[in-house]
Picture 1 (tube, one colour):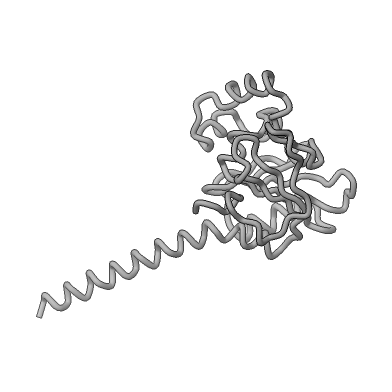
Picture 2 (cartoon, helix red, strand yellow; picture 1 turned 90 degrees about the vertical axis):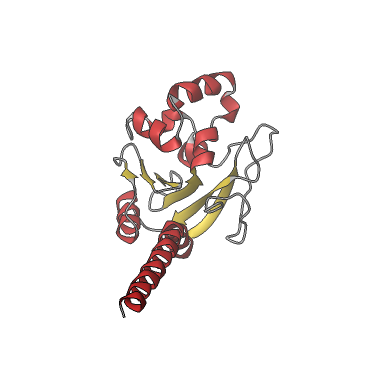
Length: 198
């Protein structure tokens, strides 16, 4: 009598564990899907180290940085939230950076850039994050000791390979082989994009 009950409890526990694992996977993918459904895909920016890895830039029309951040946070709580400073704010999720910036050409709109950690680690200028996060936070999230210091040295040596964010470059970032930013990307473009590998 006891054995069937024990077997039933173990089976139920395994089902719950599997459901929890699937829910966590869907939860991680949820923010990308939410942004894709909520905002308009505007552009993509290719990595200098791996052309199959890129960030996606969306436009939130007639919304401020505060409104966009509030919308995203209410949908899924980030691991880290920066201050809103100098027209930019960053939300860090498990595998993604969501970088919210002013559209300087149309102040009523806001850009929402989605980039995986690898893209940020290998392409972003540390200067972009000045005042947003303490350096140790980025070291921990990007899993690189002294990321800011090491990346700054690379940026001094190859400034053309250092991405200042869509806010700073207007999408003009070019890779090592001088290929221009991909414009007019579609949400069907995947490969090594922000949601890849999860």
